[in-house]
Length: 388
Length: 86
Image (cartoon, rainbow over all chains, first blue to last red; front, side):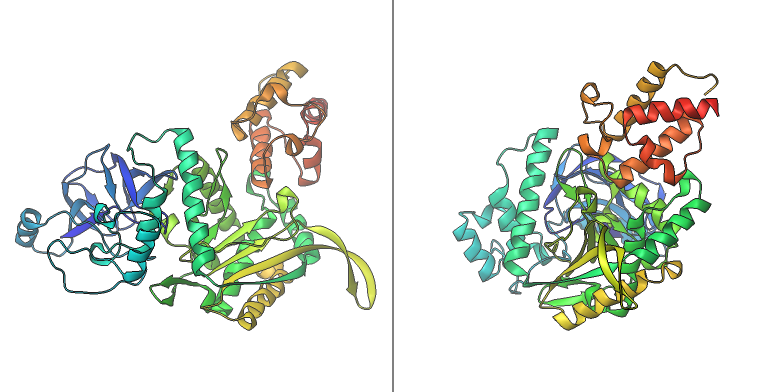
């Protein structure tokens, strides 16, 4: 029997409200299939099943607001004996938490009835922020109260009314504030930037788009995303999440793309396996994810999977981005506006379209040298656009 | 489209499509000669989606090189009118 739990979709999520079950008891679900719609403080999210099997019990009701890690449904996994299912359904208490990919290190001590599981650092922070940890439900391993729990509790309003649009905006601002403050407090950022000649890429894109119908054309942003994805193969240290006290590299390359929301705030959903997608496929997925981000129908894996974020502020006229890493990611790549600049080619000064690429990276994970190798790889890849 | 639209009708249709791209915008405030991107919060993706909507709604082919012609309300109306007479 497998627990389908309220997933954690980033360091800033502590709870969610079940909007709707997409399946009923007895339905078969496959891994990755959407099983529920959950409303978070940021947006509505379609939550995917992590298992393949038959739904045995739907525990949570639509409208229930529950902490991350709480068991919402029970799924009998394929190949598991039926009697085991029944015993566990009756005996299983609702869990208060599951390991979060972004949880802080905790003090692992034998569980004692009534004893709080909280690290000294979280305890100290709770005192500083005047948060009573005994009133919290921890999201760390075994229900441990994490630093993130304390920050969220400190920022959270005390009432539990349904989230209105205005409330959601305010809440999103608080969440972004908490995540960014945490990032700046905990992550020793270093910054690098380089100017990239986009002449070849822009010429290639213009010719490529001539061959495509208006519905299939590429934005130059997908070239940047693909270049970042391929560069991560060369510098895999940057394709990682910070877990506990170490970085854990991801076997796959999922790029988070920063999408500004019309009502304010932003999200950075994943373009999965971006290194393996053709530019056309990537463009289709990019359009889809932007559309769904703004419609509030992103999926849980799109929040939890990215290891790096790409943001482009060129449309707003910005030339250089100094980004803040979104924890538990370990890097962010920013692109500015493509501008015409004097450029030396074969000892001659010529005008070239140039974009400034910047890297914000976690110094606990990489050093400037590897960051520089990464930016150089992006540059090289963009000089061969047909190979992207 | 089964029949040519009058300029006013074209203008209203373009505004409707624009409203679908930028639902938060007050379309009554859109200045006809000012670039959409200078008066509304739309980015490259939004503008591409807008052009695709024009293409699907009016049945016109739009070259990438002609995108600037569709960057204002007046530009859209003029280009779509010219397109019908070509």
